[in-house]
Length: 251
Image 1 (cartoon, one colour):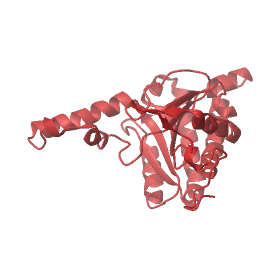
Image 2 (cartoon, rainbow, N blue to C red):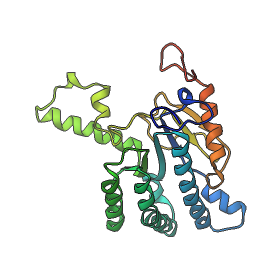
Image 3 (cartoon, rainbow, N blue to C red):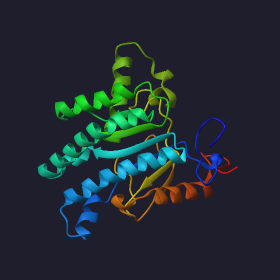
Image 4 (tube, one colour):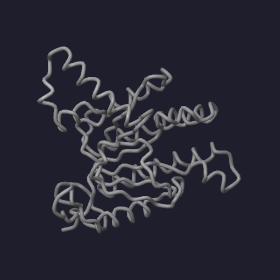
């Protein structure tokens, strides 16, 4: 453990990404490969969420963002959406107390429009209960779409300019970021997408501008602490430039 109390992974503290974002993909294919209904893949995916949240905390990742339900997922069959919502209800009711006990702060990003009222209540409860926690921050992207998030921020700016409260000349990247769902959350250092797909799927398009990206073949239900450790070790080999001169991730 580091002097400041943060646990280190094998790569060493200087190599550790502060914020890891994950697109959890492959639940359906995992189930289909086993001749199971897609719902079985989603249930196993929830078990993986529990495992990876715990592992990320043990490895010293301060912020973990999980893409749990996109704004485009509403196009899926109604029965599958209902199953996903049921699993979310079960996860919050079963795991929130443990997350709180372990000093995890929960943040929810995304649009609440169209989300069932009881789920909105649970999401609010998760945030309010853990608001003062000072350990790992778990960010859940639920009913989230990055383009909608960016348009919403631009709309707020336009309204303030139209009302004479803001001059267009003062708008900059920092001010724009302050109107996004992720305000007060550092941008991800590392993005991981499971299942072998190589695309962002409308996820954190603004925030991932300088993130290192890793696309792994492992399906989400099979993703383990060992897979996460391998991803962190790969991150440690990358050279980050941020549009300028090289910045070594290692010590």
